[in-house]
Length: 200
Image 1: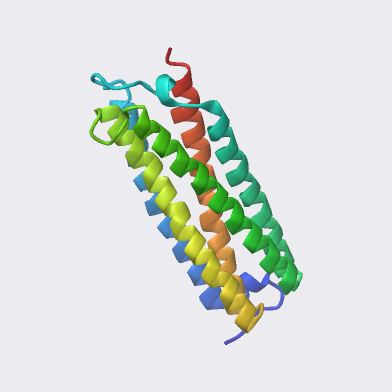
Image 2: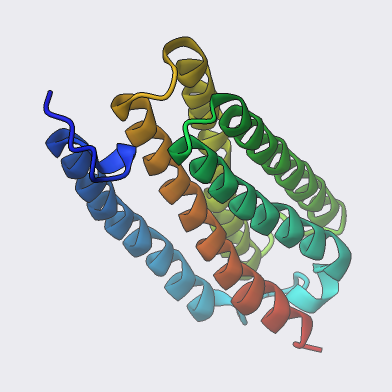
């Protein structure tokens, strides 16, 4: 395996560069997935039947907490990649662990939010609006859950093998995935929650 020392470690081999390119292509497919969900949401948002509208169930405080936790985690994982490039294994692992803890906090708020919706009569079966709302939020939450397991495996690999071209590549690709989830959340925050809160 020929290593190009003029490149960052995650780009330092031909295979690493191909892996990153392949992951960008995968993210393109993910953009199509969430684009479809947003299109369905915008189509169904006013089809509430006898169920609640967004302004009646959305609460700004938990949404702001979710946003803070996820955006902070994006900044923290950036610090983790920086530490990786400096060869600081302990700092990298610490930042990755903190990223996952913030992700767990985000999921905890989201699960609590779903329970609140259910108690207020908003379920998958209530209306077309609540159905697409739960589907969109749930799909994003499932991606975050997957990211938690993925990030844990990255931490364990770095702990066992150290920072190598292979583990650096895997870590960088994971960071791209995590940043992507943050970008999706910004759209959710803006076009679902903020827009929904102004419906009344």
